[in-house]
Every structure is written in C-alpha cells, then in structure tokens.
Length: 417
Image (cartoon, rainbow, N blue to C red; front, side, top):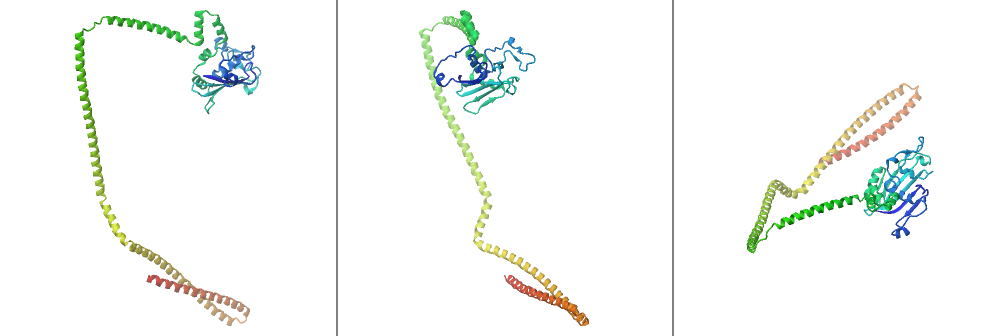
C-alpha cells in the first residue's frame, strides 16, 4: 500500500482546506522527506487525517477504559467520550473531513473519505455520526453507508488492520521515547510490542525445540545404522545374479503386457466395428420399412402424374361449371327482378283503372254540377295532373317493358349457354 495524497479541512489546528499530493512535484521525486514545524502547526493533524480516512481512529486517542467517560456539562448536547475521534473537529466549525488517495495491493487507486459534521452544519449543533466512503478512482466502484463494510473493504485492500497499521506505519511519540531509553532486552521486547513481531519469537523457540527433537531422532537412526552388518562378496554376487534374473522376468512380463494391451485395443476396435455394423443394419431395416410404407403414396403420386395430361380440360370444366353457377345466380336475380316488374305493372294498371273510374265520376259530376263550374275547373286541373302522372307511369311501364325484354333476351342466352 502506498499513500498518494491526503486532503482535509477543519481538523484540529488545520482549520483551512489542505491538499498534499505525495506522487507529484518535489514530494513525488524524493524518496524520503520529513514533516517539520512548530508545536501546534498541524504535523500530527496530517497523520490524524490519514488515520481517520483509513481507519476512523487516531493514534493519540487510544482506546483505554479511563478515556471512555463522557466529558462536558450535563446539559451540553455534544457530550462525547474523551477518546472520541470527533473531538478532532476544529473549534467553532460545523463540519470537517479527511480524504486519502492510496495505491492498493491490487494495483488500483482508491479514495477513502471520512467526514464529521454538527447538526445543520452549525458550530453549536449536536455532533452527528461519522460518514465514510470508499471509491475506486479508475471506475464507478463505491462503498458507502455502513462503516463496518467500508472498514472491512479498506483493510482487505491495504492488508493491515488498525493495530498493525499503527505499529508498522505510525510510531507514537511516547513509545518512541521509551524505546530510546530502554535497555537491550527491554528494547527488544518493546520493539516486538510496537511492531507486532512477538510471533517471530515464538516461531524461533518452536524452531529450536523442533531442531532439538530432529537431532535426537538423527542420533537414534545413526545408532541403528551401526548395528547393520555389510554383505560379503559372494552374497553380493548372488544378489546381483538374482537381480538380473528378476530384471529378465520383468522385461518378459512387460513384453507380454504390451502384447495383451495390443490385443485389448484390437478387441475394443472389433467391438466398436461390430456396434457400427449393427447400427448400419438397423438403419437399413428402418429405411426399408419406410420405403415399404411409402408404396401407397408413390402409387398415388404416379396416378397424379398420369392425370396431369388432362389437367387443362379439367380446369376448363371447373371454369365452365363456375360460370354456369354464376349464370344461374344471374338468371335467378333476373327472374326475381321480372317478378318485381310484373308486380309494379299490375300496380300501375290498377292505378290507371282507378284513375279512369275517377275520370268517369268527374264527367258525371260535370254534367250534374254545371253550377259548380269553378270547382270543376279545379278538378280539370287535378285531372290534367293525373294525366301527366299517367303518362309518367306509361313511360315507366315502357321502360320496365324494355328491361323485361332485355331480361328475357339474357335469359334466353343464359339458357342457351
């Protein structure tokens, strides 16, 4: 893990925004640098910003029980424990933050952010819970909300928990002074406690005990080796001859094994070919059965092919039948229309007869009612109108007669067809 940049605002004596890029400029080019300044200038606040952004903790606020008590007046709304990291907020400020860009073990750059604020960002408001987030600078990966999940993700990327980070990266001032003044043995124990290397001492002791046991086992084996007697030349020659005989037997057995493997391969090939032959015969039988089942269909197709010669005459017959059906329909329609015309003609004749009777009645009335001449003239006008209607009916009758004649002609033609 490598810290690339640190940013923050309103943290202890650093009440203004600050941004330090360790990967660019003079800091990026130098392999080693020191942070110096007067007391209260903000040197420790920079380290606090790194610890807050990465772990939500501060090295100078240890988790001792004596620091768990709340401080402040009982009526204060922002009573906090003595070791609460929110005390780092600058006096008279409503909010503050710490932000660290770091290069993780997976080769990607991430940004961890820690933020604290008072209610409504007012300097006298009640402290709110810390807000934390983790973002990948080369993508949209974002972890925020649950502080426990964010912390677990950061520790996985860095590879150190808070205690390991504090011992390996930060050396508290009190422990450093104690380290300088301690003796050799005490300094070794203190160094182990600060760096968390107690495990290596335990491993060293375990390795010493294991080496002691192994040396004892080696001495036992050497003692047993001294009890073993060497063979004489005759026994060695007999063993060599027996070894050669066994080697020859092994070679013969290997030759037989190779031959058996060859026969096994041939047998497997024979079974494979037999299965292929059986499958081919089954396919042939299936195809033969399908050919026999399709015999009726083939005969039907042969008949259809022979009937294709008379297809034009058959199509013409169908067309003629269709035209005959259409002509029958037209003939039925004409007959229906002829019946309607006959009805209309009968109606016209009845109307004409009624008009003739009315005319005779009018003539009789004319002879009888000489005195009502004016009324008769009106009747004459009505009679003239009736005459015109009669002429129109006669013209309609002639038209219907002409249509009837045409219908009879078409009917005769249809019957001829």
